[in-house]
Amino acid sequence: MKNPQAFPGTEAHWYEEVKNGETYHPGMSLRDYFAGQALAGILSHPETGGDSPQTTAGMSYLYADAMLKQREI
Image 1 (cartoon, rainbow, N blue to C red):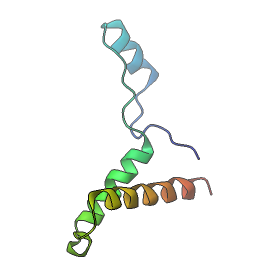
Image 2: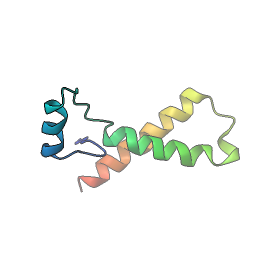
Image 3: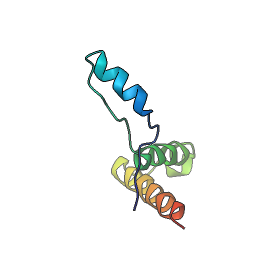
Image 4: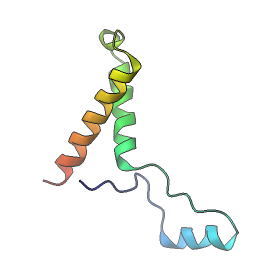
């Protein structure tokens, strides 16, 4: 399953960061971005409030993985 960066920078941007002596940080993965979006949706519904944080986080990544897989079709 492909998991690219959620907000990729341009190559020119990377060279600019290195030139200024800064460390390049690629940012979050698309999987993490999708999971965060799913988490926001899940937590916006009161009926999911009874789940443990671990269960809710796991559900978020299940949705993220499904979205990544769907992109490959």
